[in-house]
Image (cartoon, rainbow, N blue to C red):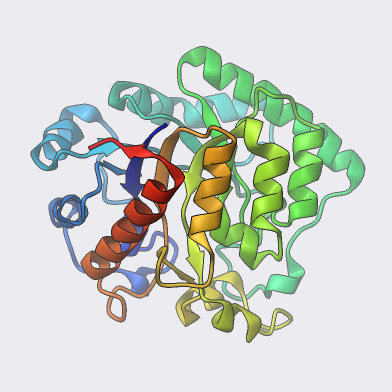
Length: 299
């Protein structure tokens, strides 16, 4: 089985919390990612969104675009509006030969609101999830027809956060809607990461290898503290530095035949967790566990 290793720029600069950002250029970010051994990077706010400008920069460091976030609003919007909103990113990603657009539902989400406690996250009724699942399926079908698939990112503080909510979305959407499996977000939400892989492996098209610090998460007061508070406290980290068993996680993905990108995506304070050091640690741990699972990592 073949796999590729990517990383997200959120280790260097945070799009939601400016204070969790290192004062580094895009060139320096890519240079460090390449030094750590990664061949792909997801996009972030310091990326020019066109290949005429970005392509030569990526080529200097042997990096390709391996995905990137889109702030979807389909829950409360309509498909035609979302088609217009995603069009520019879709054209860019097609030109970049990216594997997918990471779809994150931001409608009603409190993930970017530091004043909103985790316990106040939005919840959908059964009827709302049924309607939402149909809309997401239709949108995913259109995106795939355009030549750029999406991958749905379940996320803390969003409408699809918990294992139960993810199960419901998968039940009420079609196979045309692929799933981004994020180990860290699922564990933070109290889900069973191996059980979710077993249940939904046929839908998994992209993987974020986010680790968690269990001690930090267990000490959170979810009635007072927000998702961003948790990030500042150090809830997330890279594989090999946290509490999750990535030997078991990667082996389970291998058992079900997953091939594709494994992306380190762990937002932290770069002043406390040097991005290059953490990138190297995450890369080394992934190489170790992927070798045990029988993966051939493409370089």
